[in-house]
Length: 81
Image 1 (spheres, one colour):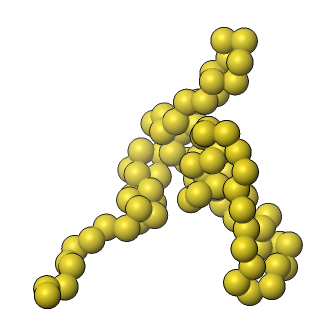
Image 2 (spheres, rainbow, N blue to C red):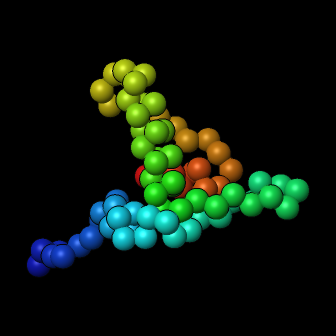
Image 3 (spheres, rainbow, N blue to C red):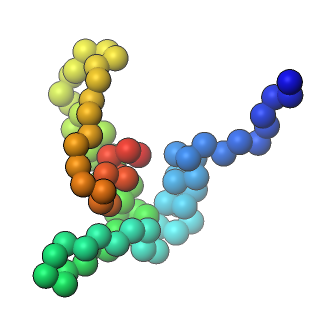
């Protein structure tokens, strides 16, 4: 059995695109009534980091289980990151 080499992890790819395409639109989210919210790579990663920092600030015990309950939306992807 051979080892897998040169595998790029999803988060590594996101960091790459955040750096290279910071101001390019990454996701769009319909908000209702014809309103659409655009998230650039930089904005999406800023949101993801803010979510992570919030959770970290809660001082949950190590190995706590955190659930995501949401519709399929841009913030779901950001929370997964």
